Amino acid sequence: MKRKDIINNYREKYPAHFGLNIDFDGCVIEVQVNTRELQEELADYFKEFITVKKADILITAHECPPQDLGIEYTVKQPDPGKTKIKEEFFDLEDGRIVYKRLTGMIFVFGNGENAAIGPCLENSNQVINFINNRFIEYMLNKGCFLGHAAGVELDGRGIALAGFSGMGKSTLALHLMSLGTNFISNDRVMVDKADKGLTFYGVAKQPRINPGTALNNPDLHCVLKDSEREKFLTLPPDELWNLEHKYDALIDQCYGENKFHLSAPMNGLVILNWNREEKTTVINIVNPADRQDLLPAFMKSTGLFYLPDSDEKQNDPDIAAYTELLSETTIIEICGGVDFELAANACLDFLKTGDLNG
Image (tube, rainbow, N blue to C red):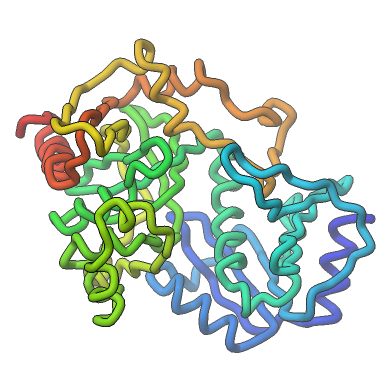
């Protein structure tokens, strides 16, 4: 079974006549779909990046019932701390198939050929992620490192925001947006060595936030309905903090147009390492070689949706490689008590002056 044969079969069976081109900071992806509804939804989601430029990558999406390819998949074991199995995969001689167990979606890709197959409109978020993953793969195959971080930029200076699980990197990014920065990315960045320092690239994925983030930032009040806001305001702080109920915070609706960029110099990397039980927030510049314990907060495995273009990229970079990379930028640890306002102001000072104290 070959990737090309599977994709060609579905392109003939469910022809994709509706298209759009999306410009991811110079990497243009053409997406062809077989329903007008899906085209319109994707065009609205990626509206800030629509282009007429010639495409580098083609993806087709085929709306159809869940398909059985007659394949015996391998189960993708859940990430640490999680138990639910969501993905299975099968490696072809010229690509890979990923099957989403909960939705029935199938994604076939490899050697420049990419297709999403199944109930695409019902699972448009997975189609969006697949599109973004093609850009991530493109950048990784150009030599970038993958980072688990949000990012913002101000006047040509950028800062990535990482943190251990549940630390609030997206919340901090949106606090910085309220202070006038531009958005680079919500959860993934690709980092490349530049002539001077580092450059980081974002992913065109809108932030998804918990209710507490929306309640504590006036720019995000539009995300919640009045009835929801009243309900969440009655919850104890601990319950609100731990509540997993995600909302899309669309950058253009919350902060205005032309605020979502996809690249910037990476002048700094903040690593959130704070604790709600502590009282005083502590902010320090650290040496990554001395604090390798912090680096796993930023390091990110490439995962199932990445196929390397050479044998030397088969394995993810190790902590030594990340240490060398991050020695090219300023690493800022924020520990002690949780204080988003203090952290945001410190980050803003750094973006404006290159110093934590303004």
